[in-house]
Length: 470
Ligand code: ADP
Ligand code: MG
Image 1 (cartoon, rainbow, N blue to C red):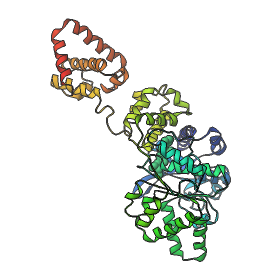
Image 2 (cartoon, protein in one colour):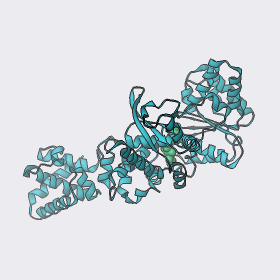
Image 3 (cartoon, rainbow, N blue to C red):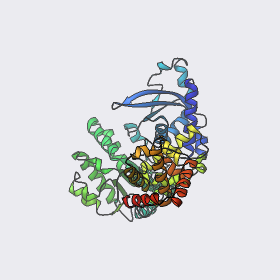
């Protein structure tokens, strides 16, 4: 396969995945005439990364894609290529400058890197930094996040009036950033208020660059950016750390906005009381408003999040219910990890083109992603252990391809027990016995059932094994 062909396939996979992330109309309007120009290997902080240059038809399209979808593109490309990705763009005019054929001659002027941190220029051309992909509509509610979500909605309906400041805390990956953007987007869509979302790193960067430049214009720009706004959101405030000067500046910014009844929204991975590195006076101010906690999702919520994430995608109808259970019960209590599992499953499906996405397929697709062996502490593994102990063989033997009678018979006993004393399905059991197919499992069950009718010793053995199941 030549490189062009490979890039085309990667791009097609990407577009397929993208359809599950953003509306079809957006895929068509922004991505239709784009393609991969090249993919290069590079490194960042000593880790290998891929640099993907996307060719778009015009400067306008490029800027819009950059603004709206950089994170999404990077995330999806990472799931396809298996390495962190940085995205760059090129347009046809720029290609001509490079003599067309000499790809290596591309200079940094011709490929515009995506800027992530806020810069001097951005202070003049104001950007809210909001990501439109996060909304209340695509936030799935359960017991663990209901309060946080309904308080967020109230804040977005009456910014500056109800809960000020509004402080959301919870472990990483539970939806804090999502809720903040949802609030910001709601306010932008329903009012003329000016919203600014920044991470605490961005705030620090903006602030330290004033100190370095000591340029009056720049100081004004900083003030204009952080004070002429109606809603300020600072994400992951724990990273404000002990940068004393930055904290002071934040304190002033906070007071200034608060006095003008402007809404302040803050998120953190811990409660205000636990933000030991923040000055006492800042922590006190956080407690003036409302503090809500987001808890880890329970299994029901996880399942609904998975379904929500899967829906709308072309292959969603191929997915067995069991696969959803499997991901929900084996992923970490972190929605980011859950989403990663779905993305990976779909990326694998895009490559393999399966007729159905069943447990076996999911297990294969996610084997490096979901750490623990899937049924580690399940009833199946307990039965396997008890049977192996009784017959003085190993669990590996039971799962192996070995067909000698001293292993095959215990294996059939174990399969029989799994089928009759757990709720596990034939495919699940097959999977746990070295990926054996349906008919082998059924045959084993029938065989032992028959034997039991005649064989008193076997009945005793099974009784004993059952007593030994821990
Ligand atoms: P945090 O900021 O708390 O670390 P994020 O808001 O970045 O977490 O959430 C991680 C990912 O999980 C995001 O892609 C987000 O959209 C998703 N997510 C989290 N909670 C939910 C939810 N309740 N419904 C839908 N998606 C969610
Ligand atoms: Mg976050």
